[in-house]
Image 1 (tube, rainbow, N blue to C red):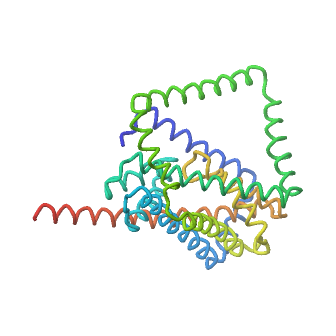
Image 2: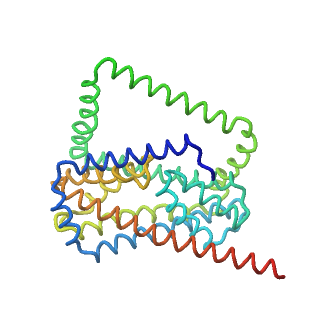
Image 3: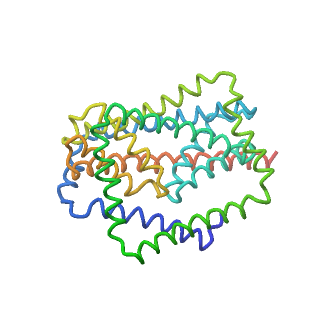
Length: 333
């Protein structure tokens, strides 16, 4: 993939936004105390949290294979797993690039058309979004008094105050930027996909239809549920790693996983900054100080980052070795 100047500027801008949010989150906090909490964490529970995330990645690969099998592409578990992990690694460099990378790996290793793969990935994501919004709705129903205060005071009131503080030129500038962004997005989509629309549509439709073609839908739905259970457990186990959060119960983990799910949807590399601020705000609802929430968020985010760096690098090496061996065997036959 060749990255042009506009693309490079876009990704640098997104990364800068993440760093800026990270700075805002830690600004005014006692960094020394936060570092002491991180150093004194119980890393047995950090490991249990990371292991739960790894199980979720394994289940994601198994679930993805079901969609391929439904459209008659017998993708191996090994290639699906390595593609998923390398995709997460790619997301650390460029947001949302990982989805393209894992489809590209399956295209090269299993000869599956790219847009058919993209259709299966979008199908996966639609189910994940459905689970996220369902859990968010359940959170609002069962913890309305707790969460509604955050929505009103931090989000609605905070944004309203920011907008109210803008001068007339500032409001005009904000409106112009929003219109230009939407117009640029529409123009990009028309230029990028206009001429190739029919071929793209046919292949995407094949990928989208993968769920409807599943002979048994129960395994796919069970995998989806299990993935989110392990995400939930990763949050819950990590509570025990920090003294301040060790007394939190399942309801706090339930809220944290919803908040973190929306944070990771932000177009920022690895959710950096946004994840830290959002998770810390979620724990404030349960009488945890923002400082302690930041220490918890830093621990869990860093452990998952390290996990992806190790597993992703290992998967890259394994696929490189397999491809090199296949090339050697083909050359000397």
